[in-house]
Length: 600
Image (cartoon, rainbow, N blue to C red; front, side, top):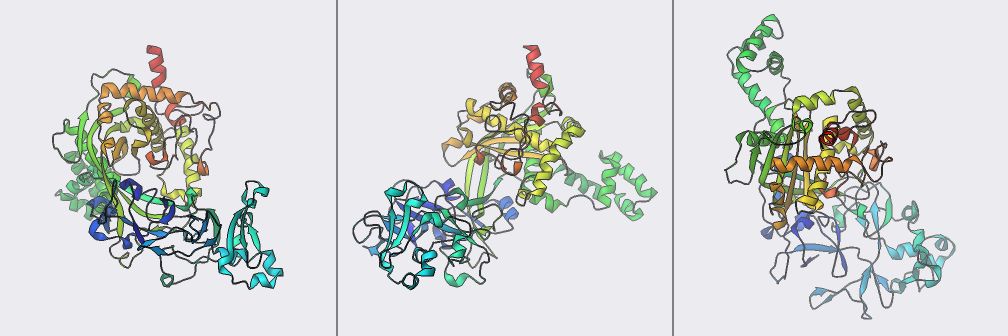
């Protein structure tokens, strides 16, 4: 284990170079161990109670990284050399031996040539473990080992070489591991066939490269596969983020509290659904401005508990945004500053203005991002926690960063969006994605693709693509947060487009300026016009099976997809037809462009 000092942005310490990821540093291949190896004196705590509650407890700490010139006492992340097997670029010697020169790890062969890490490693198919391939063991297995006893019993560890044979072209057949002691050689093309490592007797060690051997309590039953060291599937980060917004109680929770405090509520509960309970419920409803069904629901205990509502990140954020929209100009000067803007007097297509009930210019917002853990090889593999130390069950440490930015918040009219999503053809089209999500073993982590979510999610992507031209930000610097749920007592229908970065890129002011309604409405119309025709049409607009697990309908790179780091769901659950309409379905905003073109 060695502390490596090199330039690294804080955001990169979460992803793509977080705990468990392979990173190339000065020609060496290294892996960042879990947070139990960190020097906690230089890993400052980050406060975000909402996110810690969602994680189930623990501590958020900023990685001890740095940028710029480093000194001896500069905070740094520890790294583990992986893979340990390397070959010399001068003499081709293949080994995992290393040494120190002047107190530092040496990356130089005895002949003076630089050591290059082997390009293949072994990854567990379902356990998310990674390990070195024992190249000496592998080189002395295969067909030759079954026929030649000298190959089977060879112990000449210093005679292993890694060659590239020019006579065999440029494929894996040209890459050969050869033992000059017994003369046996194997091509790397034999390594990548299905079940190759299993047939050669190489089993999963059931741990991560930095963990000691005695940390494994049970053997891993899954097979190993040989993959390239730099393959993207070797590290799939599981991140979670929260906006640091003062928690507000949703309206349904406040209404339930008022109902319970009413003098007649005890009589509603005592009658337990009888005629008197209905009468008293109506009296309470008239006095508090709610429905009798709401009063009876509270009495029956059908409402969502306040603690559950507050622990859900988006519920608290939605309630906070609504409070800001109703307050108008925000002069609080906190880390959450939003000016509520009205659409009165704003010129634009009436079919669009009627569906938007509020706009918020988010001048300042703080976001905290944390790394829960990672997976390897596939999304169905086991999740490896970011903290594998002794305290992981009591107080785990999660790598986290805090970012500041700006944004635009849009709230849509609940009555109009509810009327639209009640149409049978709209629900039928959304049910296509709902069925596929239910049939996928990993897609259950995505939001439920109800009509309003798909439409607002797609609209957010269209707006990000348009804002990238007008705001001065790169599209990858813009993020989305979708509030679209009809199952809650407080229904949500809104989108937040914001930027958050660890440097000045997050607070340049170009995005919040475009949140002014007179500038935002033309941008929305332009975004819809951009998506009305895709370069892949008619294939794209007629498609209902795009992307991984076919979790997109009419959406592709030519019209609706953005950078995957900008999207909550990794560019999934999108459909242009539910925004702009199609031959068999009405879109949420399908009458906007015809109105604009008629008036133009």
